[in-house]
Amino acid sequence: MALSAADKAALNAAIAAVTTPLTNAFNAVGKITITTRLMIMWTVLTWIFYPLLSYKFGYIGTAIATLIVGSSSFIVWYIANRVFSINALKTIFHPMVASVLMVIVLILVSHLQLSLLFLLPLKIVLGISIYLIYNLYFSRAEINWFLNQTNWLSNKN
Image (cartoon, rainbow, N blue to C red; front, side):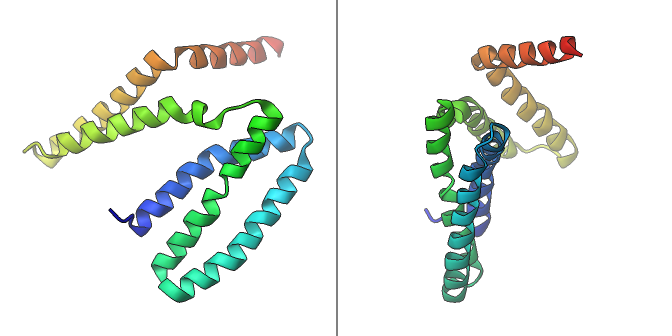
């Protein structure tokens, strides 16, 4: 099964959603050199792959180049694991499973013979509910940690 251009762009956005906070964390702890080197790497990869693949394959080549450059973000995850002892894959596991579960249920619901006026609100409520219930059940420790951090910050002021 080949990925469409939209699928490749969505996959790249998902990778970037994890990578961006990690690069911000490097900056926050004074590891600007790491971020600078990563930015140089991404610039060089962009200059190489976008023109070559766009010329060779057109719009699809641009999507492939986006995916290649975005996939280099796994280097950020590796460096973050070394610097902060953060396992990025472990961090995104439950939200990813919740998203996949939500998509599967919503695709199944789409096959019901319901009016669009009823189907859209149903899908919104179902999607939000599935995602929230899954994460509240399986990510309780992370949610409690986050709430404790925000309470600590609000009590500090």
